[in-house]
Image 1 (spheres, helix red, strand yellow):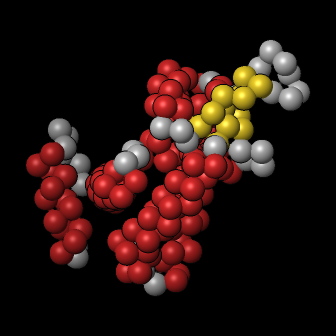
Image 2: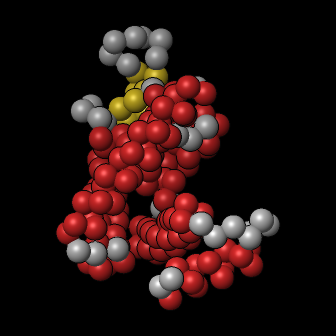
Length: 170
């Protein structure tokens, strides 16, 4: 067993109630720790540089991704996999910050959409650059191209499975 696997096993045995240390357990444990570290680093950088949270960024980037930069609240919640109440709270804060505005739907006069403002567009572009810079700095730069391709395949499989499970529960 490599030193990295041995260290992961040692960490897992001390923190795992059942003491398991098979390949799947190591994969999950390593993935979990790595994603928590990356999310914490991104959260810290976004807060320090732009005064937004990672959750704020997820909302803003989701709105940026649609053609008219607007969505209904329910669509937005489904898109970012957050509860409707969490999206309501985040949108309220982002509206106060001037990054999001409430607009009347052109297709349904009864519907109100949340829409990215020009100020919101600016912060999305700056946050995206920070995000890309951090991912390159902490992850991509350290990996060979074949490992990057493998990560894409693995995460596509995981996301596809999780999305189908999440959609079934919705």
